[in-house]
Length: 263
Image (cartoon, rainbow, N blue to C red):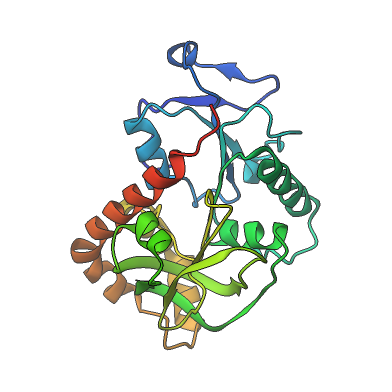
Protein backbone atom coordinates (compact mmCIF):
# COMPACT_ATOMS: atom_id res chain seq x y z
CA UNK A 1 0.00 0.00 0.00
CA UNK A 2 1.43 3.35 -0.98
CA UNK A 3 -1.31 5.71 0.16
CA UNK A 4 -1.96 8.75 -2.01
CA UNK A 5 -0.43 7.45 -5.22
CA UNK A 6 -2.54 8.92 -8.00
CA UNK A 7 -0.53 11.36 -10.08
CA UNK A 8 2.59 11.16 -7.96
CA UNK A 9 5.95 11.95 -9.51
CA UNK A 10 7.91 8.73 -9.18
CA UNK A 11 10.28 6.50 -11.05
CA UNK A 12 9.71 2.92 -12.17
CA UNK A 13 12.39 0.77 -10.58
CA UNK A 14 11.26 -2.59 -11.99
CA UNK A 15 14.41 -2.66 -14.10
CA UNK A 16 17.70 -0.89 -14.46
CA UNK A 17 18.54 1.64 -15.69
CA UNK A 18 15.62 3.68 -14.35
CA UNK A 19 12.86 4.61 -16.77
CA UNK A 20 11.13 7.93 -16.18
CA UNK A 21 7.41 8.32 -16.58
CA UNK A 22 6.58 10.99 -19.15
CA UNK A 23 5.77 13.63 -16.52
CA UNK A 24 9.15 13.14 -14.84
CA UNK A 25 11.42 13.66 -17.83
CA UNK A 26 12.25 17.29 -17.08
CA UNK A 27 12.34 17.08 -13.28
CA UNK A 28 15.39 19.22 -12.38
CA UNK A 29 16.49 17.22 -9.34
CA UNK A 30 17.55 13.69 -8.61
CA UNK A 31 14.88 11.37 -7.17
CA UNK A 32 14.54 10.39 -3.54
CA UNK A 33 15.19 6.68 -3.08
CA UNK A 34 12.48 4.98 -1.02
CA UNK A 35 13.13 1.51 0.40
CA UNK A 36 9.77 -0.22 0.98
CA UNK A 37 10.28 -3.44 2.92
CA UNK A 38 6.70 -4.68 3.31
CA UNK A 39 3.64 -4.68 1.05
CA UNK A 40 1.39 -2.93 3.56
CA UNK A 41 4.01 -0.48 4.81
CA UNK A 42 4.15 2.00 1.96
CA UNK A 43 5.17 5.68 1.97
CA UNK A 44 1.72 7.11 2.81
CA UNK A 45 2.09 10.72 3.92
CA UNK A 46 5.69 10.83 2.73
CA UNK A 47 4.44 10.21 -0.80
CA UNK A 48 1.66 12.77 -0.34
CA UNK A 49 4.28 15.34 0.69
CA UNK A 50 6.45 14.45 -2.31
CA UNK A 51 3.45 14.85 -4.64
CA UNK A 52 2.58 18.25 -3.19
CA UNK A 53 6.14 19.51 -3.66
CA UNK A 54 6.89 17.86 -7.02
CA UNK A 55 9.66 15.71 -5.54
CA UNK A 56 10.40 12.62 -7.66
CA UNK A 57 10.46 9.27 -5.88
CA UNK A 58 12.24 6.06 -6.82
CA UNK A 59 10.34 3.45 -4.82
CA UNK A 60 12.26 0.20 -4.43
CA UNK A 61 9.70 -2.45 -3.48
CA UNK A 62 12.13 -4.83 -1.83
CA UNK A 63 9.33 -7.14 -0.65
CA UNK A 64 8.44 -7.70 -4.32
CA UNK A 65 11.99 -8.44 -5.46
CA UNK A 66 13.27 -5.01 -6.49
CA UNK A 67 17.02 -4.62 -6.12
CA UNK A 68 18.76 -2.09 -3.95
CA UNK A 69 20.75 0.52 -5.88
CA UNK A 70 24.51 0.05 -6.04
CA UNK A 71 25.20 3.65 -5.06
CA UNK A 72 23.50 6.76 -3.69
CA UNK A 73 25.10 8.90 -6.38
CA UNK A 74 21.87 9.06 -8.41
CA UNK A 75 19.65 10.20 -5.53
CA UNK A 76 18.87 13.43 -3.72
CA UNK A 77 17.79 11.68 -0.51
CA UNK A 78 16.97 8.30 1.05
CA UNK A 79 13.76 7.32 2.85
CA UNK A 80 13.55 3.94 4.60
CA UNK A 81 10.15 2.60 5.63
CA UNK A 82 9.10 0.04 8.23
CA UNK A 83 9.35 -3.74 8.35
CA UNK A 84 7.98 -6.53 10.56
CA UNK A 85 11.52 -7.96 10.64
CA UNK A 86 14.26 -6.99 13.07
CA UNK A 87 17.12 -4.72 12.05
CA UNK A 88 19.33 -7.30 13.80
CA UNK A 89 18.31 -10.12 11.44
CA UNK A 90 21.22 -11.51 9.47
CA UNK A 91 19.96 -10.54 6.04
CA UNK A 92 22.24 -9.43 3.23
CA UNK A 93 19.87 -6.65 2.15
CA UNK A 94 19.91 -5.15 5.65
CA UNK A 95 23.68 -4.99 5.71
CA UNK A 96 23.60 -3.52 2.20
CA UNK A 97 21.13 -0.86 3.38
CA UNK A 98 23.57 0.03 6.15
CA UNK A 99 26.38 0.39 3.59
CA UNK A 100 24.21 2.68 1.45
CA UNK A 101 23.29 4.75 4.51
CA UNK A 102 26.96 5.25 5.38
CA UNK A 103 27.65 6.18 1.77
CA UNK A 104 24.77 8.67 1.87
CA UNK A 105 26.23 10.17 5.02
CA UNK A 106 29.64 10.56 3.38
CA UNK A 107 27.99 12.27 0.41
CA UNK A 108 25.72 14.50 2.56
CA UNK A 109 22.62 12.84 1.08
CA UNK A 110 19.92 13.18 3.79
CA UNK A 111 18.42 9.97 5.17
CA UNK A 112 15.08 9.60 6.97
CA UNK A 113 14.05 6.37 8.68
CA UNK A 114 10.58 5.38 9.88
CA UNK A 115 10.42 2.78 12.72
CA UNK A 116 12.49 -0.13 11.30
CA UNK A 117 14.01 2.50 9.01
CA UNK A 118 15.08 4.51 12.05
CA UNK A 119 16.54 1.38 13.60
CA UNK A 120 18.56 0.42 10.51
CA UNK A 121 19.78 4.04 10.27
CA UNK A 122 20.86 3.90 13.92
CA UNK A 123 22.75 0.62 13.36
CA UNK A 124 24.47 1.99 10.27
CA UNK A 125 25.71 4.95 12.32
CA UNK A 126 27.13 2.80 15.12
CA UNK A 127 24.21 2.43 17.54
CA UNK A 128 22.47 -0.73 18.78
CA UNK A 129 18.94 -2.04 18.36
CA UNK A 130 17.34 -4.15 21.06
CA UNK A 131 14.10 -5.14 22.72
CA UNK A 132 12.05 -2.15 23.85
CA UNK A 133 11.04 -2.00 27.54
CA UNK A 134 7.45 -2.57 26.40
CA UNK A 135 5.80 -2.99 23.01
CA UNK A 136 4.06 0.07 21.58
CA UNK A 137 1.07 -0.34 19.28
CA UNK A 138 -1.40 2.46 18.71
CA UNK A 139 -1.33 6.15 19.53
CA UNK A 140 1.09 7.76 21.98
CA UNK A 141 2.14 11.29 22.87
CA UNK A 142 5.69 12.14 21.86
CA UNK A 143 7.51 14.82 23.85
CA UNK A 144 10.22 16.91 22.21
CA UNK A 145 13.50 17.70 23.96
CA UNK A 146 14.26 21.27 25.01
CA UNK A 147 16.88 21.84 22.30
CA UNK A 148 16.15 24.44 19.59
CA UNK A 149 17.03 21.79 16.98
CA UNK A 150 14.22 19.53 18.20
CA UNK A 151 11.65 22.33 17.93
CA UNK A 152 13.03 23.11 14.47
CA UNK A 153 12.32 19.53 13.33
CA UNK A 154 8.86 19.08 14.85
CA UNK A 155 7.42 22.56 15.30
CA UNK A 156 5.78 21.58 18.61
CA UNK A 157 6.70 20.48 22.11
CA UNK A 158 4.33 17.51 22.16
CA UNK A 159 2.34 15.67 19.50
CA UNK A 160 0.47 12.37 18.96
CA UNK A 161 2.08 9.71 16.79
CA UNK A 162 1.22 6.19 15.68
CA UNK A 163 3.44 3.36 16.93
CA UNK A 164 3.90 -0.30 16.08
CA UNK A 165 7.18 -1.71 17.38
CA UNK A 166 8.76 -4.19 19.77
CA UNK A 167 12.37 -3.01 19.46
CA UNK A 168 14.06 0.36 19.69
CA UNK A 169 17.41 2.01 18.98
CA UNK A 170 20.12 3.60 21.06
CA UNK A 171 21.31 7.04 19.96
CA UNK A 172 24.26 6.83 17.53
CA UNK A 173 27.58 8.39 18.56
CA UNK A 174 27.55 12.10 17.82
CA UNK A 175 23.78 12.18 17.15
CA UNK A 176 21.27 14.15 19.22
CA UNK A 177 18.19 12.68 20.90
CA UNK A 178 15.19 14.79 19.87
CA UNK A 179 12.10 13.11 21.35
CA UNK A 180 10.76 10.51 23.79
CA UNK A 181 7.45 8.96 24.85
CA UNK A 182 6.12 7.44 28.05
CA UNK A 183 7.05 3.91 27.03
CA UNK A 184 10.04 4.56 24.75
CA UNK A 185 12.87 6.90 25.72
CA UNK A 186 14.31 7.11 22.20
CA UNK A 187 11.65 8.25 19.74
CA UNK A 188 13.80 10.32 17.37
CA UNK A 189 17.40 11.38 16.79
CA UNK A 190 19.21 13.65 14.37
CA UNK A 191 22.71 13.12 12.97
CA UNK A 192 24.80 15.69 11.11
CA UNK A 193 21.81 18.07 11.20
CA UNK A 194 20.26 16.35 8.14
CA UNK A 195 19.62 12.66 8.95
CA UNK A 196 16.54 11.75 11.02
CA UNK A 197 15.75 8.42 12.65
CA UNK A 198 12.26 7.96 14.09
CA UNK A 199 10.74 5.14 16.14
CA UNK A 200 7.20 6.31 15.33
CA UNK A 201 5.22 6.23 12.09
CA UNK A 202 4.61 9.83 11.01
CA UNK A 203 3.84 8.56 7.48
CA UNK A 204 0.56 6.81 8.39
CA UNK A 205 -2.71 7.76 6.77
CA UNK A 206 -6.24 6.41 7.24
CA UNK A 207 -5.83 3.60 4.73
CA UNK A 208 -2.53 2.43 6.14
CA UNK A 209 -3.85 2.23 9.71
CA UNK A 210 -6.89 0.30 8.56
CA UNK A 211 -4.73 -2.11 6.56
CA UNK A 212 -2.63 -2.79 9.64
CA UNK A 213 -5.78 -3.49 11.67
CA UNK A 214 -6.66 -6.47 9.50
CA UNK A 215 -7.24 -9.95 10.96
CA UNK A 216 -3.50 -10.59 11.33
CA UNK A 217 -2.88 -7.23 12.99
CA UNK A 218 -5.76 -7.66 15.43
CA UNK A 219 -4.49 -11.13 16.34
CA UNK A 220 -1.04 -9.66 16.95
CA UNK A 221 -2.50 -6.96 19.20
CA UNK A 222 -4.51 -9.53 21.15
CA UNK A 223 -1.35 -11.52 21.87
CA UNK A 224 0.73 -8.48 22.92
CA UNK A 225 0.63 -7.92 26.67
CA UNK A 226 1.91 -4.40 27.26
CA UNK A 227 0.74 -1.11 28.79
CA UNK A 228 1.84 0.50 25.51
CA UNK A 229 -0.58 -1.50 23.35
CA UNK A 230 -4.07 -0.25 22.54
CA UNK A 231 -6.92 -2.42 21.31
CA UNK A 232 -8.13 -1.96 17.71
CA UNK A 233 -11.36 -0.25 18.80
CA UNK A 234 -9.48 2.42 20.72
CA UNK A 235 -7.00 2.94 17.88
CA UNK A 236 -9.84 3.48 15.40
CA UNK A 237 -11.73 5.73 17.82
CA UNK A 238 -8.72 8.04 18.16
CA UNK A 239 -8.09 8.42 14.42
CA UNK A 240 -10.55 11.33 13.88
CA UNK A 241 -9.06 13.42 16.70
CA UNK A 242 -5.35 12.59 16.31
CA UNK A 243 -4.54 11.82 12.70
CA UNK A 244 -4.75 15.38 11.39
CA UNK A 245 -2.30 16.55 14.07
CA UNK A 246 -0.02 13.66 13.15
CA UNK A 247 -0.17 14.71 9.50
CA UNK A 248 0.69 18.32 10.35
CA UNK A 249 3.70 17.14 12.33
CA UNK A 250 4.70 14.87 9.44
CA UNK A 251 4.57 17.86 7.09
CA UNK A 252 6.85 19.82 9.44
CA UNK A 253 9.29 16.90 9.66
CA UNK A 254 9.38 16.33 5.91
CA UNK A 255 9.75 20.05 5.17
CA UNK A 256 12.79 20.29 7.47
CA UNK A 257 14.28 17.10 6.05
CA UNK A 258 13.67 18.01 2.39
CA UNK A 259 15.47 21.33 2.84
CA UNK A 260 18.75 19.36 2.74
CA UNK A 261 18.00 17.30 -0.37
CA UNK A 262 21.04 17.00 -2.66
CA UNK A 263 20.33 18.85 -5.89
